[in-house]
Structures are given as C-alpha cells and as structure tokens.
Length: 407
Image 1 (cartoon, helix red, strand yellow):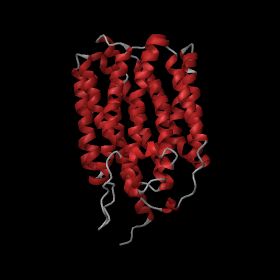
Image 2 (tube, rainbow, N blue to C red; image 1 turned 90 degrees about the horizontal axis):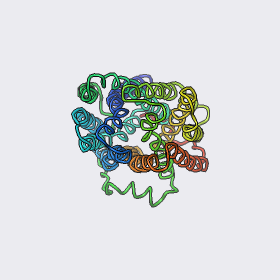
Image 3 (cartoon, rainbow, N blue to C red; image 1 turned 45 degrees about the horizontal axis):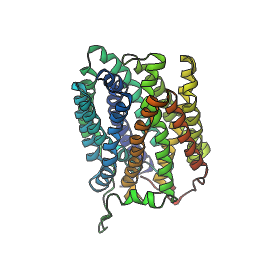
Image 4 (tube, helix red, strand yellow; image 1 turned 120 degrees about the vertical axis):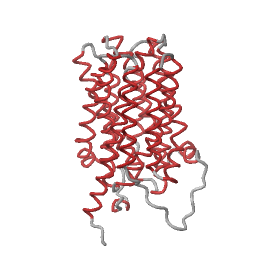
C-alpha cells in the first residue's frame, strides 16, 4: 500500500503535536518553581552568589547528562529517554516542595538538571519527524511549548505560594507524573530503525564535543559556538532577573509570575505565529542575525528602564531575539548533520549550552552582588554582541540536497 504525501504529513503533525503537548506540560511545572526559587533561597539566608550556585547546579547536571542522553536516544530511541527525563523532573519538584534547607534546593536542581539533559533528544525527535525545509518552524513550535509552560506555570506557582511553600513543588510534581502517563500512551517512537548490517557508532561519548573544540571553524562547531555564546548572554540576564526586579521594582514570589506571563506570551506569539514567515522570508541565517540584534538591545536597555511601562517595552525585545536566534541556529545544525547522528549533535549543542548556563549564574550573581544591579545586563549584552559578530561572519545557508527528504 502506497503512503501518500498527505498521510506522511498527518503522521508528522500527530507526532509533533504530542511532543509539543508533553514539552508544554513539563515546562509548566518547571515554570511554577523557577521564578520563586530565588525568593525561597533568600528566606533560607542564601546570598545572591549562593543563589547563583543553586541555579548553576542544574546546568552542571545537564552538562554531564546531555551528550549521554543524546547517544542513548540514538541507540535505544527517543521515547524512553524522554520518559525517564519526565520522571526525574517529578522527583525534583517533590524535593523542592519539602526543601527546608539550601542543600535540598541544590539537590532538587541537580536531579532536575539530569532529567533536563533530554532537551537535545526532543530536538532530535523533531528532526526525525519533520522534513528539513520545515524544521526551523517546527523547532519554533517546540520552543513555543516552553513559552506556554513558562506563561502559565509562574502564575500558577505564584497563586500556589499563597497555600504554603510546599504547594508549588507538589503541584508541579503531580503534573509531571500525569505527563508521564500521557507520553507513555500517546508519544510514539520517532527514530527510524537501524539499517540492517550497519555498524554501530563506537566513538567515545565525548568525541563529538571534543571535535567542536578542536575544529571550531566547521559548520556544526561554528553553529554550536553561536548557540552557546547566545545562551551565555541570555542566561546571565535570567539568572539575576528575579533579584533585580525584587530590588528595583519590589516584586515578590507572589507577584513575579505576572512578569513571566507577559514575557512568555510574547515568546509564544513569536515562535508559534511569526517565526515561520520570518524564516521563509529572510532564511535561517538571516533570522539568527536579527535575533542577536534584538537580544543585544533588550539586554543593555534593561538597567535604563525607570518605570514599569519602559521596562515592559525593553522586556519585549528579549523574547523576540531568543525566538529568532535559538530555533534558527538549531535548524541550521540539523541540516548540517547526518541523520544517524542527530541525537548526538543536539545533545552536544545542549552540553555547550549547559556550560554557558553553569558560567552565567555564577558570573551574573557575582557581578550583581559586587559591581551593582545593572552590571550583569551590560555583561550579557557584550556577550551577545560577540554572537552577532560570529553570526554575521557565517555564510547564508545553501540549498542542500536534503531539502527533498521526508522525515
């Protein structure tokens, strides 16, 4: 029986919709606890620099787990890796709910980071399921699931905080467990069966990561460095955002959720509605370059906002920039990678992004504590300016022979 193009498109859409729903629910739980964590840590007498360490611990765990998850998903499949990651998130949120010490906050973040190493697996799932010419748009839809979670989650978390410190974490853990059941029943495997007689990959797990360092000028390594540097600038800002807004605009754990609702709504509109047409018009390289410009101005103008209205205008630039920069860069990496190595490539990209997220909170919270409230934003802006230099030195993507492939 012949499979028509419309049948393939329906199958792709079904797979992608289930993955997007799973990612959205997962990020809703993440969004419930992320904005309020610094306020809880302050109540436990943590300093800004210690809060930076708590934030960085997530990324240390993600750094170590991302390439492993990528290789595991290439060998055993995307679905089991994603399910284990969801279970780890549920455990982490439960620990957060009962945390009565700084060290339990550290434990929660480390466990969640280990599960969060499956981000690259989700990106590889998209690359498995979607034709190359549509990947930037599909990755934008996946990113929009994060925006939905971070749009709804912080508001729910802020409301739940009225019922006690344990409520946000326990509700988030319950959502994750429901998500596991949903994904177990509805999320199919996306990885194509291995070709009979093909030899398995025997390179060491860190070989691909070392190649990015050893040959930084190659197509995939160059894009990986752009992705990592952009993440370094963005994560520097997000690491101190709650502390900054608390100091300058008197936000608390019961009101910070509305800031994330506003930013995530903008991100959702950008990634789910506008990203596809923009990429279609200017290409993935053009979208990546535009993203660095918006993100740069969004960061350096943060300390200049003297009122909530001006702050709202500046905040809008950041989700516009990230919505263009990160999905476009990831899509370009997928085009330059062999299909059998997609999970590993995305895992390595997330490894370098995790290195950035380790460095960023330590650097930003130290600058916040020692050099002033605006210092982290100027540092982040300088880093993104470097991304712009790299992006504008990258040649526009060629039309590859893989454009005609079906996933």
